[in-house]
Structures are given as C-alpha cells and as structure tokens.
Image 1 (tube, rainbow, N blue to C red):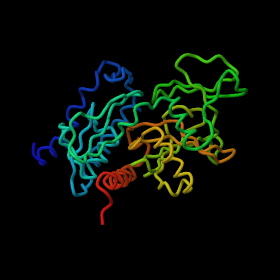
Image 2 (cartoon, helix red, strand yellow):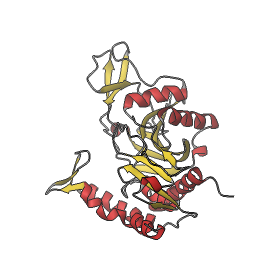
Image 3 (tube, rainbow, N blue to C red):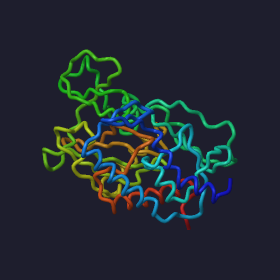
Image 4 (cartoon, rainbow, N blue to C red):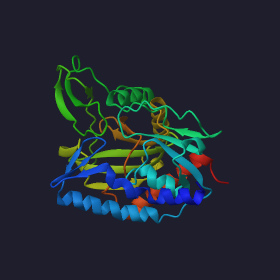
Length: 319
C-alpha cells in the first residue's frame, strides 16, 4: 500500500468507530469493556464538544517528514489522544506492523501482556511493550520506585483514613475508609492525598502527558472535593510541565515511567497540600483526551505540543 493510500486510511479510520458501540433506547454500551453510558443532556454536550475537537484535530497541519505507525493488537480510535497526536506528528497509519517505522502496543485494558510482532522492520521503534500492567497496585509500586516513598498502605496495620479503590484502571470508584480494616478482594489501599487547591473546596489533579518517559504537557483538572474520585471536571487548564513541576520532580516522573515501562501515556499526579510531595496515583497507556472541559484552542495547542514531542521521540529532534 502506498504512503498516500495509508494516509487516506489513517485520515478516515474514524469511520468505523461506530462498531465499537452498541446503541440502545436509553444508552450505549462500549463493546470492549461492557461499560454502559446512559443518554443525558450532559453526555450529548460532551459528544458535541468532542466532535468539535475531532474536526479541529483533522485540520492541524502535519509535520514532516512522515513515518509509518502500526498499532497492535488494537487500532487507536479517534477519541484516543495518540490518534490526533501521531497524525499531526506526520505519522502514516499502516496495518502491516512488519513494515512500520513505529509499532505501538495499544490495548485499552489494565493488563495487556502483548509481545512485539515476530517480524519487524529493521530499526523499528517499539512503544509501550514494556507497559503490560497499569493496575493500581503496580502504579503504587512504580510511584515508590520513582519518588522514594510509599503510596500504598496496609489496611490491617494502618491507622486512620485510607483510599480504597479497584485494581482496574479507569474505574473511578475510590472511597475513603477508616483503617484498620479487613481488605476486600481486588481492592487496593492507599494513603489519602490532600490535593486541595488554594480553594479548600476544590481538588486538583495534575494530568501529565508523557512522551518518551518525559512530561510533555500538563492538564490541571479541577473539581469539587466532594467529587474527588470522579472524572467530572469543572475546569481544566493547560500548562507546560516546567511551570508546574521542579526539575527534580520532572526527573521523578520520568523515573516512574521507566519503572512501569510507559513510553507514551498519561499519569495522574497529585500534590499533597501538607508537605508538597507528589504522588502518581494512575497511569494510562491508552489515554483519551484532551479533557472535555478544556477550551478548544488549548486542546489544539496541546495536540501540537504533544505532536512535536512525539515526532522528536520517534525521529529525533529537527535541526
């Protein structure tokens, strides 16, 4: 298949995305995960905002030179951040991993023990094949490796409040429990991070996009403290990593990505209000985005920032 044909495939790959959903009378179901999303005005508004970004992302000028990219075992759909970013970076999609310049392990699952294809193009760059486990316990382990202090607690010996949450990625089912307590199956227990902002009624998540293990941009996500474990943001702002983190903290974030094997993805960083320490509480190698609540110009700006970082990581910085 020619580069032009591949380019066309990459541009129009979103046309089959409807197959990922099962539409019912009162809601839709995500076939991959079984998650059900009921229809509501807020959902329709989010879909409208996403389509605005989708068409804006298609209009982003593509960087050159181009390179071919293959996703395996799943193709990256348009609502995943890598779709717009790799396209803007000059990537040309191919379904033939054996002839791709870049091969990315892509499976929207907590556990993804996928190995690289048996046949690869000489010099092909492999992405995220070392990141096969983004469970909450693995994230807590990598956090300790990167920062040198513990996020996890033993619910049988810990005294005081703790966060109890599912091992599964993106469950958003955290709750605060009092310890000591008997641990439940498939749940993890972590210290409570006081990530409230200057306004004590608002918490801040520092969603940090990483490329090549390094922070590339930060989405500061704000929501009421009563909804701290949900993903319903009231405000999102875009910032450069160096405006949010110190050089030492940036090195610690990179150390976390190395420990968990994350070449591309997003990490949720929380800053403890009491002592200023950082904790990474979530890692996602198939992150969606940019966040819905971010304004459209900054969504496009973020895509451009990430596209440059991705191109530099894949091809090397331009002269």
